Each structure stands twice: as structure tokens, then as C-alpha cells.
Length: 323
Image (cartoon, rainbow, N blue to C red; front, side, top):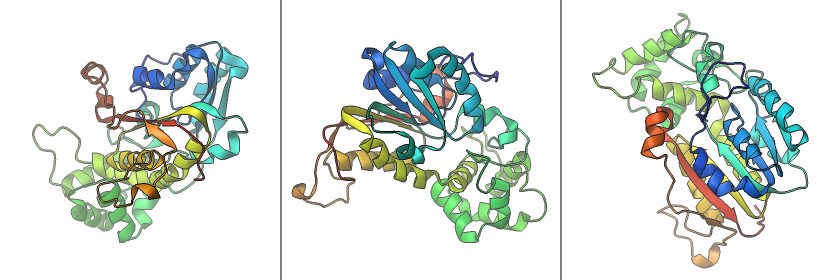
């Protein structure tokens, strides 16, 4: 969730928080006439605060498993009172907190927030030296350092080749295995340096850091992000009222592919090019607001470079399903 639009002044951090595709999200969710909404990836609260500001009749349930997000949410709790409810939990537990009332709109902004990237102790960034952690919820699970030291070769391959989509995955995996026990895998900068050497160093005019894909794959693996998304998509759809909108921003091709296929399935379309199912075997429970993904404008990318890989997909519910 590369959050992003306005600096979120309620935050205890000085990090500038710019919600990605903000105008597009508000346009499709349409909270201006009021209603009940859910932001399943609160992050820095940029999207949530704008949804709440849209109307005095708007109510919102926000979720996030990052302990620091709860602190950032306190400002909204004070400002909006009972209209705003924050849930300190991962979005895959949506069904445990949604209650009987259905949502007019559900928003998901996948990935990690600017706050998480710029907080050294969270260990996400290879530009800030710190213990390499990468857990979205540091209260549970295995840190990235422990994963790198103990994971099987097969698990490393899955993380780096499949999740990170690193073309030189074999060299990176071998370098990680050789570095075990040396201390190189314990901190962000030393781990990034190891990966950089494994892939051949930094090339001239290289757009992204050589360790970007590897770090991304490790993060996705230790947090079970794809599994969590697969679990949450049907829950989010079930929680919508008829006519309700599901809006999802993704930054990674694997996440976007999963979202696209889910939305095509729910709209009664073939899920992918190899889907040879008959029309009679498919049922339309929703409609895709736009067949293709919605991308940030050139102006937004210029003002917030982190938005460049963002894409938004929107689904409107037509009837209840059995999923």
C-alpha cells in the first residue's frame, strides 16, 4: 500500500503521506451522499480521512495490522467520533468484524505504506540500515532475517523467483545460502549489498535498485500476502450491499492478476485467456466498472513517483453470490 495525498498532519511521523489514485477512488466509491464504507488497508489514513470528509453522513470501518496504524487512527477517532471505527487486525479477518450491516463500498490499497518504508526499525527499506524484519504485523510470524537464515532452498526460490520475479534468482538464492551464519542476512544494508553483488552490481541509468525485486519477494513470502488477498477477496465481496463497490489498488503484477481474475469471475467473464468455460457455466454477480485497469495520471506520477506502478480495478455488485 504505497499510501500516499496530503501530508497527514495527525501522524506522529514526519513522513509525507500521499494517497494514490485518491480522486479516482472517491469517484467510484462515491461517499458524498453518505453511507457505510470500509478501508481495509488504513496505512496512514489518507484515503480514510478523505472518505470521512466527503459527507457528515459517512461512516467508515478501517482495518490495519500494523500496530503503529492504530496510533495514526487516533486522530480520526477524535475528529469523527462514532462515525469512524478502527480495527487493529489484518484484512483477512474482515468477516469477524464486519457485522450484519453491508458496506456501500470497500477499498483495498495493497502493499506497504510510506510510514512502513521510512521507519528503519520495521526493516523494509534497503536504503535505511536496520535489522531486516519486513513483517506487516511485527507481533507475529517470522522476520525476514529468520526466513533468510532458515528457509529451505525451495522456499527461497518461490520468494525470489515467483514473488519477486527476479530474473537472476538462482544467483541470489545461492548467495543467500552461502551467507548464512555470517551476519550479512541480519541487516537491511548488508543484505541489499549481498543481493546487488549477486545480480552483477548497479548498472548505469538503472531505474530501480538491484535489491528491489528480492526484497519485495521476501516481504510477500513472510507475510503471506497473496494467500491473505485470495482469502479476503470473496469476504470483501460478500460484505457489500447490492450496488456496492469494491475498489482495489495494487502495485505488484501477481496481486493485480489475482484481483483481475476474481473480478472477471464475479462479472461472469472468462478469468483469463486460457479459460475455456462455457457461458452457461459462468454467472454474473457483478459488473466491472472498467474492463482495463485504471492508472495514475501523468501529473500524479510526477508529483508522487511511488504511484507509477499503481493500478486500480473496480467492481460493482449486482446480486449476492454463494462464494
